[in-house]
Amino acid sequence: MAAVTDYHMHLERGPWTLEWLERFVDTARARGLREIGFSEHPHRFRECRAIYPAPLPWVDAQNTERLDSYLRLIEQARAAGLPVKLALEWDYLPGFEAALERALGAHPWDYTIGSVHWLPPAARGGEWWGFDDPARISDWERVDVLEVYRRYFRLIGQAARTGLFDIIGHADVIKVMGYRPKADIADLYEAAASEFAAAGVCVEINTAGWRKPVGEIYPAPPFLRACRLAGVPVLINSDAHVPEDVGRDFDRAAAVAREAGYRETAAFAQRVRTMAPL
Image (cartoon, helix red, strand yellow):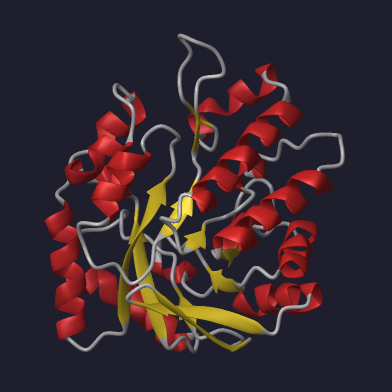
């Protein structure tokens, strides 16, 4: 095993029980991981509703849980001696930074992941677009793909600049549905990597891309190389939504990281980053 942590996983497909959480821990141990971190989606929690525009039907339909249920479960796991970290995978939506900062500051997270899953309206009166929603894949047939990529990459740069996040999640998830611009986007990679370096954030090497329609790791190898040249630290995460995916394809991801020139991986505790050999 080339990495000893996995900090991106979600419990959302099961109950708030120690038994369900322990299945993730069991897989992690079987794959040689030392510790794992849960980074639930905040749209599930009523306490985090203010970080999204209203109305937003997709979020409103799922915004039914209390954050305390999640926090208590992680506390229970720690009390049982399980090696788990506490986090959320925060959605970055421009214009909602103040609400995000308030929500983020309310609890002692071990690290914060910032991701972009929504693009703001392209014109007045338009709607927010959840570009990774399988139910809206047909939207991709009606857009300028290169312009969508440009908008997305501007947003992940903005997310890094907020200073609210320790890790940028699946940094080129805009490709998830398999739609790619015909033009070379090396300039987008380089600009984003420069923003990440200036902000002092890590980028996760997220193996879930290999399990998605695009069939490619996040970030793409050329993007990862741009991050390495800019001096951006990395860590490997699975983005597991089921126990079986914890630590999945980590050796393969480590090989990609080494090919890009990386020799270290990041770990976190109470939002303090340390580095260890990859």
